[in-house]
Image 1 (cartoon, chains in turn brown, yellow, cyan, red):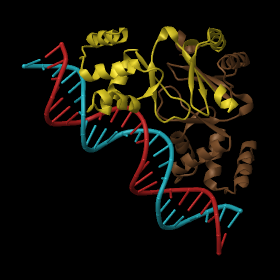
Image 2 (cartoon, chains in turn blue, orange, green, brown; image 1 turned 90 degrees about the vertical axis):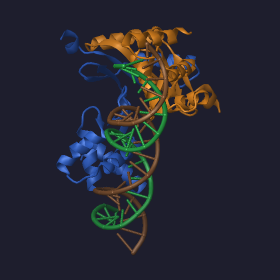
Image 3 (cartoon, chains in turn blue, orange, green, brown; image 1 turned 120 degrees about the vertical axis):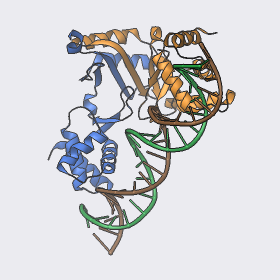
Image 4 (tube, helix red, strand yellow; image 1 turned 180 degrees about the horizontal axis):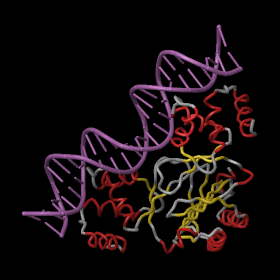
Length: 144
Length: 144
DNA sequence: GTATCTGCAAAACTTTTGCTTATTT
DNA sequence: AAATAAGCAAAAGTTTTGCAGATAC
């Protein structure tokens, strides 16, 4: 059993919630996913191994994972659909997004984070979290 | 007539679109607004001077302004409603958001933008646009 | 006069909620 | 046995679309 599933089960036990087939299936597929996934996409993916599962259950499980600190919801640009990604607070990262092909690269830049704290302090703010997205063209699209 | 209204009228003429009372009213109230506003809020605000205007018209006008490059849509955190702000490419700015009271401060930090270009280049990307939001507590909420 | 625009109602789309039955503990 | 969860259908919230009458050019 993976560490994340163990984390989830610990959270469920703590809260007096139950380990169900559906929760395990949704969580497993979610944790096996690289990058971002919407509730709808996750639903379709889980349906392949667990036909009959409800979209509602996927939404509820994603909320559960978010409350457990194992997932994080994001909204990119003008997307109407929210997407979720694995939360891993020790490796908080930002995104580079290709406006032509949609490719998303994750990165981490401590120097920028330091400057973010500086600018926040200048305005009297403390920083708990941040999001940064850079939009542009990736190498492939730029040379094509 | 303000510069932005003139810009809008130029855009309308270019595209063979018409100058209507409703478009002028929505645009005027939008341009007079500081910060961010949702379609719904803008609709309520315009309704005060133009009762009978339709929410649909507000949505359509905001899309028009966006296409004209005079407005920009954003989505903050887990907000389900999109908000619009004046687009002013010569003064692109970022946001500091208080997670307790919701206060939003706009800022601009050229040094961070320089580093953004560096990190993008390192991954083979060019940067056309970016968004950065810092979440934390403002001075008031921190000392309260 | 003709093409565009408005406002309404209805649809579309995403996400949540109420409820009944099923499952976990 | 008691409490929680699943799945369905329906609701809720936001944004878009079709259409008939109105307006700008």
